[in-house]
Length: 239
Image (cartoon, rainbow, N blue to C red; front, side):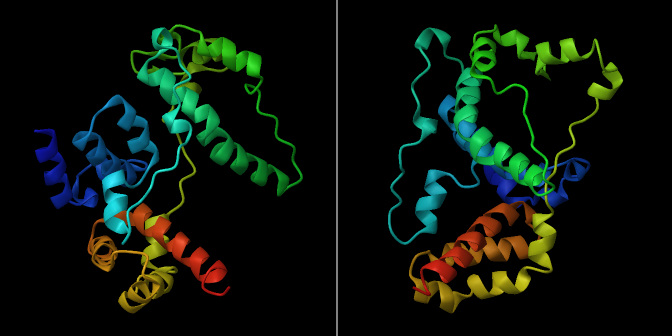
């Protein structure tokens, strides 16, 4: 049943889903839900949430087999008696998403205006203490960061804290359909792909075609491939 639903979602573009298509980051999440439906294992949850392509999709994308390198996603540091899927996801986030993504963005943004940012919850003693808290202190009946919110409500009105999350997502699909389209046409060009010899041309053209014919949930896939192509063209092709 799950695979059938995922197959149906493949046939219906995210932009055609009423109401939800207006939600923040819905198009990207729509694509990731398909991966979860196809393989809902605990190990696949975090990988599906943080990746745009599954291992199967990556192997189809390249001409040669893809060999997965070990990473923190393979960590087995958590003892069985302390393991839960949420604990695992938080532990991996500490070692990947936090330092490789979020903190880098904060540091670059701050340094661009000579501002030294100091994130308050990075002391290892706080992290270690928080990691040992009962899970319902962190995620309680759908409420995230539960204990932190309860403390903050003493100082900041709850109405302010209860607002929907407002992220800083960039309009990738709009850029790719307009200003960056010439780059997509260049680096996804069939002759360029065949000469390069790295990617499966049929899969590349299918991703590009589906994106430009309504499936804007494929924008991130196009974006990542484009970034690789531009890097490859500058640093490999020209050397």
